[in-house]
Image (cartoon, rainbow, N blue to C red; front, side, top):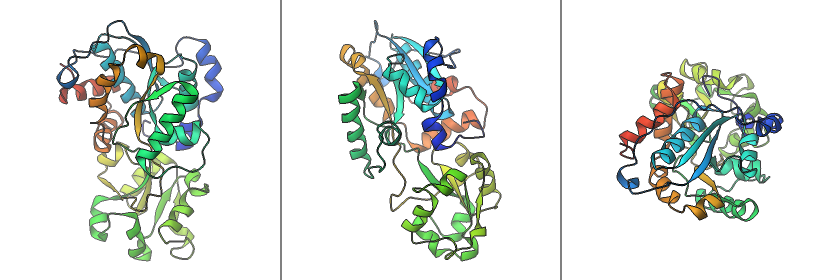
Length: 328
């Protein structure tokens, strides 16, 4: 992600052209490098994965790399021989690596799987139903096992500087229509601005129409990375963001509640090949307590430590596991 977070479409579709080269070689263009380990503790202290050999993958943006390193650390600390294949370029490549059994575990988003991998056009608003639909189809078609998802939801959202949100008395998207017309200013990326499930449909859901409820000039189309700073400095009141981006915390932005549930759900879950879960069912005991702790606030903080503070993803993941009592 760095300070130029790729668009959702880029995250979903990027890397397909490099897939053949990546799979033909050994590294898949991955990060590797030093990953600290320890000894599993607390609620996962009794899990022993001695004899398990697997490769752990991830996509190539900060949140995914942190989660991937976290999994590598957990598996190695529980006695498994876990190869670090994090930082695969693009969702398509990461997905194909799992389908080809080059990678046996990675974290994946329910919305990404449903829309990008399974070809569905309409997300399922209910988080649990979305997860169940993805879980059942991927197991049946691809022998991939989705474990229980985390509470986090890395989807689209609109953020406001916290001080401005308090001044306007606004906490949710349905209140945008109540703020003065002069304050209805928006910063969005070009993809979201033009998509048939993007900005205009969102406005319609919340009872607004550009050109009618605010002038077209109130919309600034910017690169994704520039939106955060533009929102912080007052170029616009409402900036399009990803809801677990570390810059939300660093810039003291408030994400407005999507109270009419317009945006798709992107809950993250551990996904493993069926063979691994069959041979080592205790992987569920290793991952479940950790997954339950991964909230939006946790990921915002971990992402910020990498993108804002410049820390290494592996060290950030390790320190969090120690702090939460999963590692000693």
